[in-house]
Length: 417
Picture 1: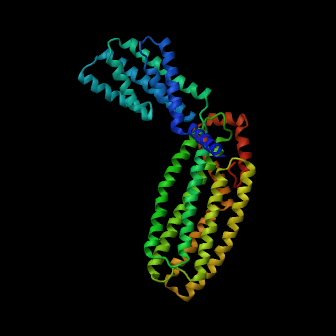
Picture 2 (picture 1 turned 90 degrees about the vertical axis):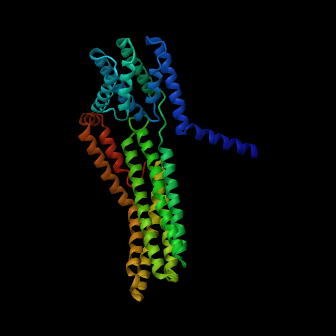
């Protein structure tokens, strides 16, 4: 029994390792570089055509979109550098001052042709070509090897499509939601009793540290968005990208509001120390409400990241039920806070702020609010695409892609798939 369990654990680790971005990038880059070198040996006049594997190594990325964009920019940078080197070799040759002019001219040309991070590659290509005696042969051999490497890199991703990183982004988003839930539960438990100022301040620092978690989730989400672009295995990639991005935006807003709530409770603790933050009944309701909102945050993350329609409907129903329960508890808390403020009006601003902040989180998680947010974001992104690439948009409309996207989005509601 123990051996079977260990075997399952090993298989799970192996499965995760196969989808690890570092492992995938290493294997794909090594394979593409090797293939490019073998092809360049047969086609290039150079004895050691290392430019081809170098180009393939730099072109091949984890996602197809990144591979395509990097390949085009790198080919442009190398060709631009070679042309600059040929012009300098015909006019002035290689001297210390011509080398300085070559570098300046190459960097300027790199910015003009918009190769982005490959601007230094223009100068590198120009210097390597200008530094040899047979400029013409070496220049065009370098162009050929660059084209070989770029074509191999692009073809590698066409034949062996890179993975879609949506699942990893979803796991990262759910982990953020669970950390948010744990912090809400701790804040609620401590608010129900006597909370020292130091303890309240510690929770405020925890809420501020969640910003670092959001940055990490955002990086995972950007990789997932790139993996969806131009990927033939994914339908309605725009819809998937918008669902994930708006979901993270909602969690980020909830994190910000929770940080504000933690600051409000810290200020309240300073005002009331050594007394409890709330009266006994009010504190119990605050704890209950934060617990219900914490569960709703996790349900929201599951709704955003789920893949199957039936699971999405179940997650949406669960989220709606949890939000209705939380809304009822919020109304009960509103009555208690008003009564408490009437009895002692010195902290009525802070008591009102507590109610306002929990209400903002509930409103942000609301399924109707999310549906409206999705429609607005889809309209915005679609409009940007129509303005930026009108010809592609006309082709999509003729093929019926745009109509299908609109039909799918109207059926999304709060669901993510």
